[in-house]
Image (cartoon, rainbow, N blue to C red):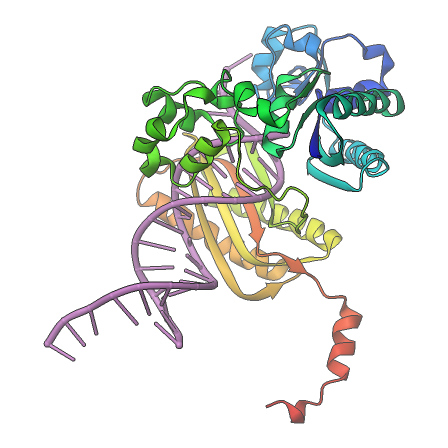
Length: 369
DNA sequence: TCTGGGGTCCTAGGACCC
DNA sequence: TCTGGGGTCCTAGGACCC
């Protein structure tokens, strides 16, 4: 029988940092921009369970976290280090399973065969202990034949726990959980469901969800199937290339000058082109997004006639889109800008230059019809 | 002392083509 | 004289996740 073993790292960034700083074991530690270094608009990226006891949470404004937990030690985020640690985990998992799906920087799933829940449970427990012993990292693990259920189970087992949900136990396991436990149900969907009297997964049934079909679209059918314990087919182990790459910048103070935005955009374009070059990717669609002072967003995008590498086409498009968004705003609300984003989509592999030229060598232009 | 910096997927209308 | 139905691409916005 096939099982999904879903591995979700506990307080990942903080745990990786503490691995390098044994003096911080058992302390209140926060990864994020240290407010003691000056006012910041940044947020908490990860907090140790000791810091969480003070009420600190991921995505909380750093200023607020500093107030709640004044003794916490702050560490500036080092994403290169976390990516390397994630790669260690993947290597570790690939040595133990043929099918490994990296799902985010701190989550991965593997597929294993096992005869029964006891057998898969003890193998998963052994995996968890080895992960701790060999890599010094703590993980929570959920196990189910269904990926989404395995993920929900891993969430419920935090921190450092293990929950195995056998197939026939799926609906009973899910029934008492709040609808927010379902990946894809966020604050908005939670409200929509609550207005229909649905607070737990067990209350999701065809008759209760039917009136919501117009607002939830196809998601309504998905929810019913999940609540019944038979989530529809999943394709967890196919890896496709990246769909988009972006750079965001939130200004220390909101910006009301287009010239400031243009020069910020120029720097962001250079950043973005640098990372695309490293990944050997070309882009064809360019988007400029603005987060206004009132936190509302606008965006402008444009598809180019062909894929590009290099900064020129990106810079030109970014300027055009930025000026257009700015012009529209100034016919109306005149809000200053909080955050600027530059994004590229429709990414394709950049052809190696030599390869492209070799290809052309073989073509006789006079023969092209 | 409000709310980062990445990402993904879905929906919906209009253009355009067959 | 009137006008279908399907498919794809583009753009904008929304919701959600880590």
